[in-house]
Image 1 (cartoon, rainbow, N blue to C red):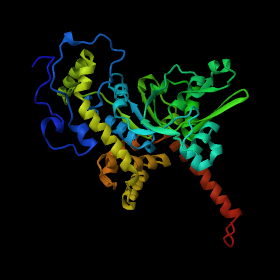
Image 2: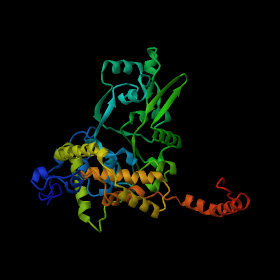
Image 3: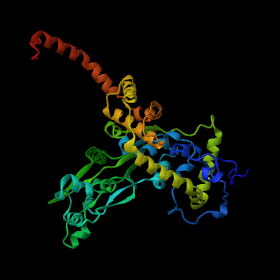
Length: 405
């Protein structure tokens, strides 16, 4: 077999080889592999600036990373994803390849982001005057549009992140604050590559916006409030520095991304090399080869997202999950929320309406790792003696009488 040829006996999608139909997205990402086409050096495209992203389904291995990203698409309440690993393991490529799989959401037609639910919850005063008039006329305030991937560059300034004065509007006697990156990320994915290198000022702004789901920008006498309900995705190389605990806590799923192991499976590395070579030789042809399966995957993501509200977590399954969290001595409520919401998303990806123990077992490593704090463990251990002395003093001086104390 030559280096520019993909073997004809590679697994194909169900529509191409007539095999067992794809039952769920999990089946698809496990079974779809390379395509039977040839690329030679003469087919290379002239420009790569407008090339399509590397197909998500063409990524070799890295199952946990791909699964974590899909869970975040299905259920934003998983809390986002943090990819931790060395350079060259496909972290950034995987995130950017999500573009073709993104589901749909309601998108405001208003400059200020007014939505129909704003009127329903807060009345006409909750939206701008123009949207209040439109709502009264029965005109739509939002349309369905694809979720977007918004990237926050490391060199972004605080005003880039939150918003700035629109100088062009000022020339026409209109004072307006333009949307920043956080407002653009509302109901979208916000991706921060090398998140551990982000400046402290920007980190603080992102943390506040993520915690509240909205933020206010004030520039002199002008102010504007924006929604910032985004799914946070980050990637980092631990060699380049640690991530602040406050920022680490913002990520629900944590994935340790290791390189493909040549000793265990040299075939995977060779296949990954060929896929990279084929992509750089002709990105459009490679993307076209995955069009059908990418479309199926996008539809499965949307179906899982639509099914999610119906997915329930039985009490007996929840109790087992709580026992696991207790065994690991995790104090964070966010660990519980992430575990259960990731379990619901996993069941939805499998087309089921009930979470079982296998679902929790599948997502537990991603949801619960890197949540222990050695500092807090030492802190509470050091406080134990003081607590004992305090309780002893209370028992001597202020003994309980009649249940009043």
